Image 1 (cartoon, helix red, strand yellow):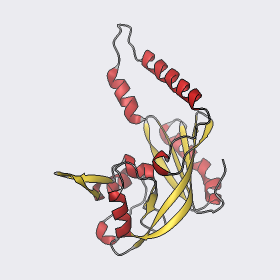
Image 2: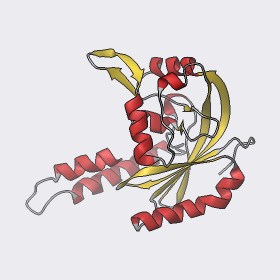
Image 3: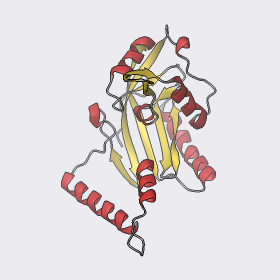
Image 4: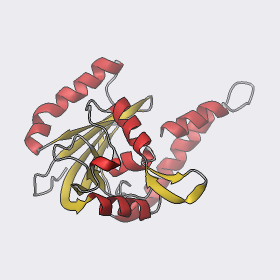
Length: 218
């Protein structure tokens, strides 16, 4: 794992197929090095299992931007294709990775106007309430005249004790860097085939609901 040359902060995301990922921000590499193991152990105590997936995102670039411009950029980007994160405060308590923004529908279409989008206060605050310890909340009027931070990251994921580098730019952001595409496709076909085979009951029926829930968790 090659860390960026600048020490701008690190996000640690840990989870498994039964629990939504916990995302923790460290202000520098030293804090990440000193406390990340403690966070993983806390996860083990809470859920009685170690996380299956550990994702690390190093901040590679920060841009100061007016909140109104950030909001405009978010709304005008194709839905679910945000490839950067943002923080509404200097402490990064209100900081979100692009995966959090996309997966939790921070950008939503207005009711009755499917082609018009907005930054959803309810979805952001609902996510904060359920998955963050901060007491801070988002309200548009608090940020209209503020300068906030847009940031970009370089990610790595540890899955089944194997480390994968993740792509950093464009619509491919977050996808694993694959050295041998043909081998990767063969592996995926084999894995999917085994999964479907195991979902067949003795009477020949598929367990469709379990398949659906598994796909949702992924």
